Image (cartoon, rainbow, N blue to C red; front, side, top):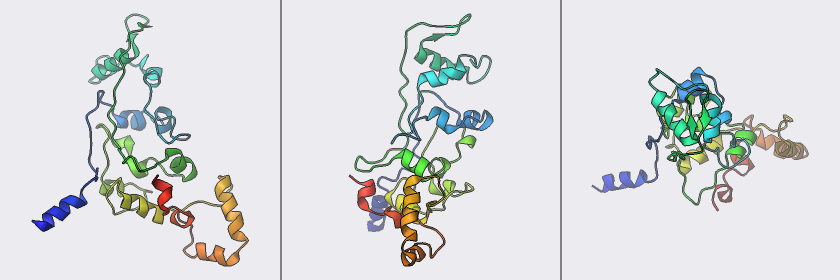
Length: 227
């Protein structure tokens, strides 16, 4: 019984397989896979904001003004988008002004005391979306927190062992993920590279394993992620 208790405690805040219902069934495999739409087209704040952002109805309408899904299984879902946008597709189509906001349910939920910045990881760190969210090009079901075992099956992903979205998962990634410095693509890391070269001994120490990890640049400091 005591063992069972502790096993249960270890599962607190482990979110793997969490998959809330959504107001509209969104097939990522059709949009990102078949149609080749880049993640950043819909989640357009991911490169410049803490949040990746939820696409506005206007973004959906950029395509679905012309694509109504008539005669297809997903026609009913597209009608929900029209209702949200206040769009009447009859004839040439027109906006009625009667809108109905879409209330999406958040999938990846972090505790309030945890700071995570998408732009820092995507732009500066060069982390691909699939490292944390899985290969969305193959997912027909609504988004969920992918188990670490599933994430490890994806080519190019850093291989991790701790449950997805836990502190151990983040720390492990910071210890394994290397940072590209001195390649001219990021001024911050270029400056670090320039300073390292001034101290041959320190430079050799950092590059003893052939790479510089996030943890070696302060990625394990508590204040990096916690307020």
